[in-house]
Image (cartoon, rainbow, N blue to C red; front, top):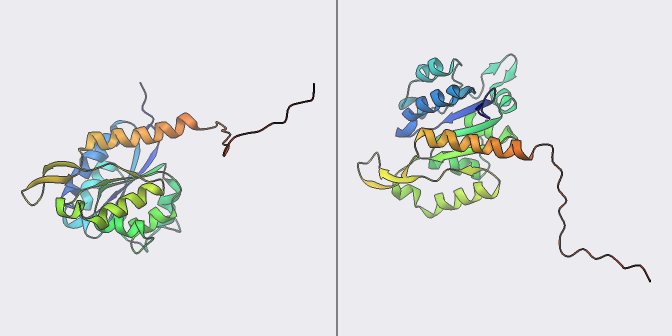
Length: 206
């Protein structure tokens, strides 16, 4: 059975977390289902995984610089326009906080601000950060704006401790992204009537 990801363009944002190495497997799984993957890395992310790794796996040059151009277009605009879905995995507290508050100061956050397609974020951080009220509030804000958060799970963290904050495994991330696109496809081209409160219609006199 063909995947809804077939022939779709996925912009994969990779933020600066130890879980960044899992982006390589995410790229592989997305391409296996027929998607084209366009990796985008923050400057912090390149300390955890080399851009050449994602370039080799995706067959696309990794986007790094906010001010670089692609065929005469600013990179954040070209990525935002070609994307069918933006997937940020791992998503750090810093990146989620910026997006929640409308801060666009690097290529990743600027591309998110410019896009009109679904955005899926897979958080990864230490439990203390994940449970921080500010981080939780930011995630609620992102959800309220229609963005999709794949809740972190409990497991062994980079600190060596066991707690909640571990990014879900690549297979589940790709399944989730596929589900988001499938739901959009299911409702595409359909019209809905939404009413507020009761509808009253006067009766004809008999």
